[in-house]
Length: 370
Ligand SMILES: *Cc1c(COP(=O)(O)O)cnc(C)c1O
Image 1 (cartoon, rainbow, N blue to C red):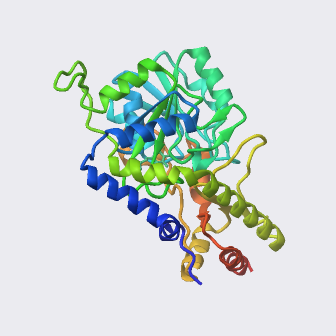
Image 2 (image 1 turned 90 degrees about the vertical axis):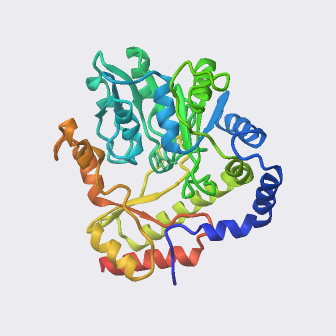
Image 3 (image 1 turned 135 degrees about the vertical axis):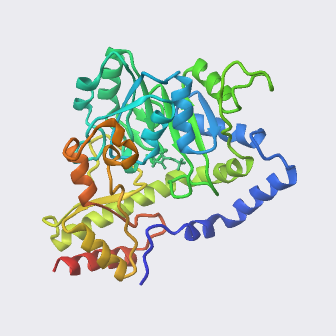
């Protein structure tokens, strides 16, 4: 048996005709950048995420960059974020000449530890970027209270979490700005790169719309220096179709997660392997199903040998990346993130995974620990 980490062909097979039809319509219109398809999709995402504005852009990384640009973050500013995330959560900060200040994570969720934020706030701190890692929301209520008390902005990196919920609301709707990615491996993945910024703030929304088209309004008149970062009509057409299925797919991922939990419990593997938790009142969308495993690297090799895909998100925390050496962090500064980097392993969780495949994954892992 072969169990890939993700099988996009299986998903495409279920919606092939609809997608092909939508793509053909865009070709017939020959309208490729922004335009009515993108506007329609922006409206859909705004209402889906419980926000009032959605601004399409070229990627999740650009969504983060545009969010910081809209908040006028630049040289001399500090932005607090987690070191245990995808690279662009921090590179958007450094690209604008600002300084990322890392706050360690909680070991049970791998999300930023809100208790660590306040001691890091200085007079230079302008914003905090919590990441809803793997599809589970960070503790937004706690984070928002700290941010409010210190008058700093909150930008949600919801790249892995579209549709996820916390007791206070949906991913993207709780900070000043929320950022989504439509990279093909996200729960809502396009046919290439794509991203979106959401907000309930009219002023920020207007600024984001100007910034994504080189800072021009009207065309060829530039009051600010923006970038070229727009969503393609082709992506919007594909994503508009896929959004209808998103909640069903995320539910299937949750079902698969509980099947794994039951199968692992039956095997009595809890000393070797810990499955992810879902805190009370949260809805996890399981963009990744990440376990903590003893002997992780050998387990991964063993799975590979048995045709099972598994990946490490992430092997090097950002405070230890070579390009950020100038920030002055060293090994030992973020112990919880560093431990996560050595023990996390993502297992296949995609909606089309069959019971037999999951049983095979668990059997193979049990055999390894025996
Ligand atoms: C995927 C991802 C991004 C970047 O999104 P792209 O669309 O690939 O640019 C940012 N942050 C996190 C946490 C991500 O998982």
